[in-house]
Length: 375
Image 1 (tube, rainbow, N blue to C red):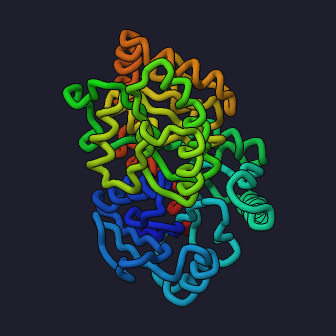
Image 2: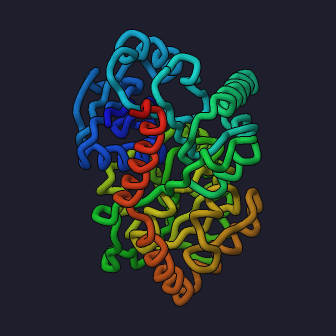
């Protein structure tokens, strides 16, 4: 098959996150299995307009803020007449509305829907624009009958509740690269280290972890928090660390390489993820594959990624006292941490990108074949 994927960013973009890891992990394997894959995405400083990376032909056009318009123009100018068998529309906040201008077979990818949670992220004017565009996109996609890949049962239920036919929803989980993410017990820190990993965005609510830190420091003055990743909420989080008087216990690493991220995950006693919503929580699975359990909020996506009491702990969203209680309890109970580590490793082993790529190919071939005229 010849496949065109449209996504806001590629794996090399410093502002990328789980969606980009998902896309690259699956479609680089699809390419490795003999299919021709082109990714159309926005550019970023220092990145060439075109390059081949891990078998993917990456075409970068325009900037991140207006890529929904650039994608339309680029498709009409450069890609409309090319013999692609199928076009993939990776939905992320502002939709590309591909059914309005693409006449090839179409398949969407959905991690999660932002809905009103976008109002946590940006000012009301911008949030309203994003919210209304997402609603418009969902209407267009539903009326077109376009099939979708979804990454978790929570996202699948969201789409079904919005009227999408279950037969058009294909669950292909986020997975983990077990060659890269692996346990290394010898790297576990001798003193308590906990971590938050991911983009620094308001809706991920890293500030909830910061608010819990003073309670941990009372119990274990030597505890250290690593905040791994970057994003536009980082300045606010720095200010909060200063206000809470916990600067000596918190380290912001900024953007790190995959290899360094794995080293930090192996060092942590446990991770914490306090998002208001996720599609799945890819960083949870990556931590688990490194033998690191995770405390997470009981919200869509994360409740799929964390098996409460087996691979980690779920806490009510926004309940700082409950978060403090669970963090302190896990900090002080090495036997429980060891049990959760065993469960986390077993759970993560169930998710493999190679299997996800094979499922993806099977769905795409079915879509393409259903559109071909019968002999």
